[in-house]
Amino acid sequence: MDPVPEFSLSFDKKDGKTLMIVHIESGSITPYYYIGDGQQIAFYRLGNESVPATANMLRELVLRGTHQSYDSLMTDHKFNNYAFTKLRSVFHARTGKEFTDADYESWGIINQDGLLTNAGALLADESPVRHSRLFCTRWNGLDQAHGIMDALDDMEVSGSLVILLQEGLDFCRRNSPKMWYKTPYGRVELPGYPEESILEGLVNALIHRSYIEIGGEVHIDIFDDRMEISSPGGMYENKPVQDCDIMRIKSRRRNPILADIFSRLKYMERRGSGFKKICQDYSLQSNYRKELRPKFYSDNYDFILTLYNLNYGVGNGEIDIVPQSSPKFPDLVGAVI
Image (tube, rainbow, N blue to C red; front, side, top):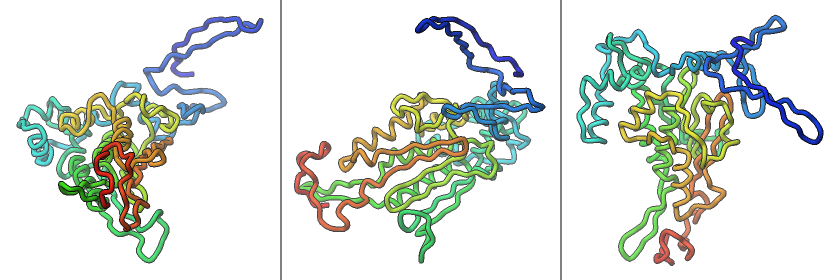
């Protein structure tokens, strides 16, 4: 192996047998290559398997081994050729503070020579990173099968990540009609998708995706019964998310500069509790059922979040009664949806 990983040996006895225990320390100078049989191959763990690293995974391993991240790398794009009006205006709108010229360097957007980092390139109004686009589609039905009308609405967005986030949220809002019921004091709306869950899911897709994957974009696909938000690159530590306890999963930030900037914009929290918040927000909805719990899936190529439409199949356009067991509105029994 090259380089040789740090390891320790110990011995133990069990059932009359002597066991030699080999403990391999977590590597900090990745990638580690197996050299033999005329080959040089780097492997990484995917679940309980050792899988040969793809070209994109090798690039990511090299960045980890040099203690760098994609968003921290310098580009040859000059700061003076780009505008950041959306970043500045959103920061002021959400925090009430002024974005100063000194913030560009302290936030990791530019270096002292006035060149953009990859993070800066992704946040410029006219982003030069072509593959950072967002594709949104409202499909007609429950899948993407061809029919008389395949899509009811679609949109392609490019530019600053802030623009992608705002446009993506607007697309989801206009394609996620709400139900409502009357009360003696007005009406109460029942969202098909909790807005905070959509926000968390889309922020995670834009911030934690692999930008090394050329040709891959973030997609929002809305069907009658669900919404799927997919992004290039699996979990940062390669373990499939479906094998993890979502409520206890630890945050690993693939793009720490972008994550820090979006926390400054108050779009996400620094402690990285997005998955947990998505599930909790769903569980607090009055028409939530266990089978509608958000689903998380990842492999070595993609991450997919599935949010289920809480109103799908409820009422079918007829008058329904809010159940007496509703934990959120116990005093509104008999209200019309």
